[in-house]
Image 1 (cartoon, rainbow, N blue to C red):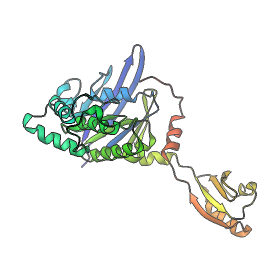
Image 2 (cartoon, rainbow, N blue to C red; image 1 turned 90 degrees about the vertical axis):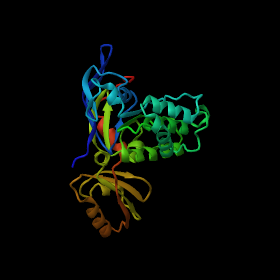
Image 3 (cartoon, rainbow, N blue to C red; image 1 turned 60 degrees about the horizontal axis):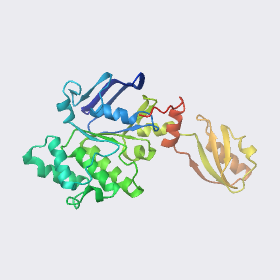
Image 4 (spheres, rainbow, N blue to C red; image 1 turned 30 degrees about the vertical axis):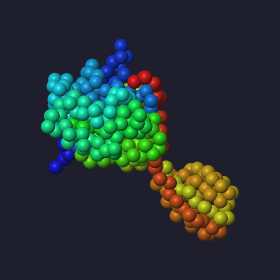
Length: 315
């Protein structure tokens, strides 16, 4: 049985004056999935997240949340959404518990369920010991946790997070990433980011935006394969002149990393590693530690986005 579709956006467009800043965006989100909306600054990620959460209205297209049309029944649809903007909507002079209870009431949590909803949200976000603290006195990492807690306190089906780790230190980023990954087990999560590590560590699937359009979508694993270079790094204890290495069948580039270590790129269909090892044995090059190159998201991202020039749309 296929996973339930919790968010379905079709052909979304949004104009700023006469300029179309979001163009014909369509995407789906499944229950239990973490989707990363990736792109350079100004690509249109925040505007898209505001459209999906109902903060902005698209000039064209439609959005369904758990089968409910967001434009026709905004109250019912938004009850299924938890939203964390890039700048968390926190009242810094309120205590954590008071703010979260206020958020729960705004989300329509019944009075009889407020205490339980508060306890669950605080537990999931690691806020058990902060309830009586003033939000403004908390670290930025803990303020971000409070922001996520207000987004999930009503147990929504869809959680929308806009740049959830921006401005955090490495330790705080690690904690928030673990929290988001845990949220993906029970909710559908979509997060926008320009950080490749975010996608690699959290997301099941990736959509890449550029200039207000989606230009690529696939699993994060398959995306990494796009950045794969056919090649390897090899240590040659008695290396020849680099020109000799170009004579190995399939070699297209040789880069000396040190006196004995070389990065060798070759054509995809060539069995270059085997040919090099054979030639090394014949010539006495003493080949050691041949390590295939692995794909990475940075290479894949560059490969995808360099196909068209980036234009900052300030969205």
